[in-house]
Amino acid sequence: MSIDSVIANKNLVRGFLKPIFYEEDGSLSAISNEDFAKVRDGYACGHCLAEYVMYLAKCPVCGHQRDIATDLKPTPELWTEHLLERQNTEGMESPAPRGFEEFMSGVNANPDIDKTTLKKLKPRRRA
Image (spheres, rainbow, N blue to C red):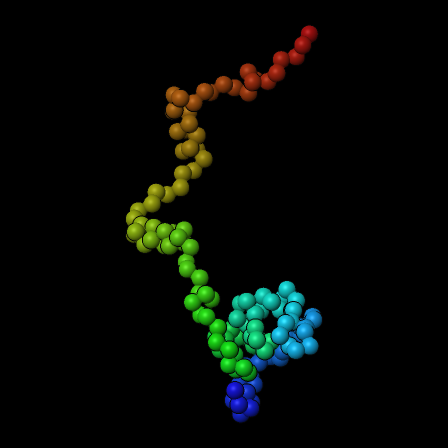
């Protein structure tokens, strides 16, 4: 990269990440977990440690190109199914919610539900 291109793109760079330790020849460096997350998510360069003001696929300082295919994650299948279900049920009539009285009348009319009173369920006192 030329100095002119770096100066032209200086508004894209916030600064540089500070390594915790590094080798004298510059081949190995370590950064904090927060800074590593910035590099992983595309908000900093993993080669020159330039920090960007937004996600960038290509570093404006050193020209390192990220693999965009690894940055784009596929949509979870559950989300896709939910959207398809919403699309297929659009415009269908849905019943209005029942009130408490209507619910209780349905419970009382159901012969499978035991209607034992609370008095019968209380534990008996010993004499």
